[in-house]
Amino acid sequence: MKLGIVGLGLIGGSLGLDLRDRGFEVLGVSRRQSTCDLAVAMGVADRASLDLSLLAEADLIFICTPIAKIAPTIEQLIPYLRPETIITDVGSVKAPIVSDCAALWDNFVGGHPMAGTANSGVEAAERNLFQGATYVITPTEKTSVAALNKVKDLACSLGSSVIITAPTVHDRAVAWISHLPVMVSAGLISAVTAETDSQALKLAISLASSGFRDTSRVGGGNPELGLMMAQYNREELLRSMKQYRHNLDRFIELIEAENWQALEDILKSTRAKRPDFL
Amino acid sequence: MKLGIVGLGLIGGSLGLDLRDRGFEVLGVSRRQSTCDLAVAMGVADRASLDLSLLAEADLIFICTPIAKIAPTIEQLIPYLRPETIITDVGSVKAPIVSDCAALWDNFVGGHPMAGTANSGVEAAERNLFQGATYVITPTEKTSVAALNKVKDLACSLGSSVIITAPTVHDRAVAWISHLPVMVSAGLISAVTAETDSQALKLAISLASSGFRDTSRVGGGNPELGLMMAQYNREELLRSMKQYRHNLDRFIELIEAENWQALEDILKSTRAKRPDFL
Image 1 (cartoon, rainbow over the protein chains, first blue to last red):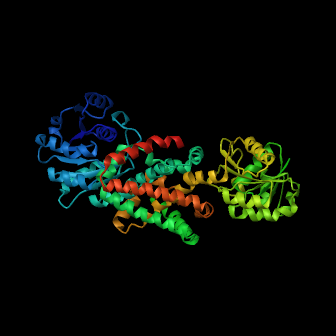
Image 2: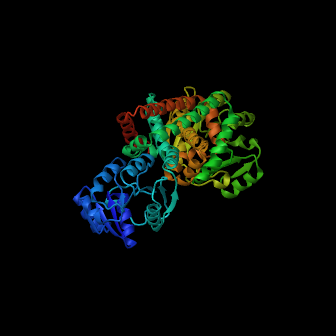
Image 3: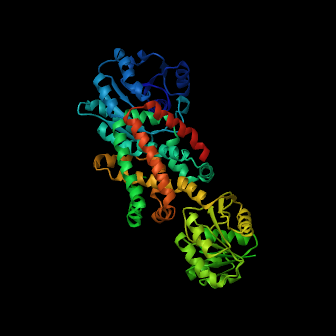
């Protein structure tokens, strides 16, 4: 089986390294010749090109571009493909992508390998990035079972645990554990830096330690990623933010009312429930 | 100079180890005989007793009890003390403590060594815990300069950087960087665990990784500590929570309005400002 990868960054590059190690021939496409050259030199791809026509030979293609480019890339690919070619993606939001891409190509299977590092670009690609990670695959009722099984087998071969679920369930879950935390954390940085008491702000800056560092970490990350989450998972993110605001309002009410017993009960419950997520 | 320590836990015990290393005679008081015995065996104190009268000999006394016990302990100590004895505390909120304790004892100086570990009890005491930490001292206009300087010299001898500021400035700053993050983080755990879509909740639990782990860490901590922050720093915590809610509401508005440029500007600014706090 020949595999194609469009977008040779951290995820595409790491997929290429692992899939070549497992004996597949890997064909890569990037927008830059220097990335193509580096990908071949690093062993990410057997051959790489700026031209999507290289993937005419591929049996299964991973689209590893930024989310906004996934459907447009598939549109550009279609003229070169045989109808039996399978396309999958690695985007971190699923419902809108699956809806757009399945309309373009019957053999499309949505996917989201939940792995990454703080680095980006093909030079950041690493072997075994997906080992032990969760790989979510999001078929719909119309997805071909044969195509789904091919993507699943590849994900398993990377050492990932595969979860198969609906695109909307995926998006709701990642809103809670990935997208909402970015907004909650960015809100903390925004709020403290808006303090107008300059003496207190200066002291806050010098006293901040691990508690502030951890709570603010994801809110101080890549703005393009935060923006992408809000744009592509807007509805689920808003739903989770409103539920969160409701919980925050409840905390404020209890502290205003000095209802310490109820506040303690909540804090005991958050301590008890957090380990489920770790 | 003889030093007294009331409350031989992590902080009191670690103070005792360092201060004895620096040549001071240390007298400890605890509520439990087993703690007194362990403190002497570990080198935390030269002598230790259940009885506050032991501290009649002390020139300077650290009150290292839970916040609620600081003023009551001073009241019980007073019958044994000479007027020139200096009392300081290590509580993590300052305005209410300084106000109560300065009314009880002229030579009171509020303090907050910002150090700790995840452990508690005298058995968790460690040498050099305060090395490189910030030690905030919060005098008022009425605080004796001689008493302030003695506390400051001891804090410096521990290797801490000393910051001298007003109790209210301290409390406003710690609301931002320590107490608000606990509520923001606990709110996240409360909100996600209230999800009624059981399929999405189950998937969220299995997908949660480092982003959720870090953002939820302080909200899943000791409930007594979170409660204490809310009780003793209520006014400043509420002020910071309301400012935070305002910022969160702004995020929700922008996402609802699909005002991506404004959201991106905020996320760029949170990325740019966070390093100031690290």
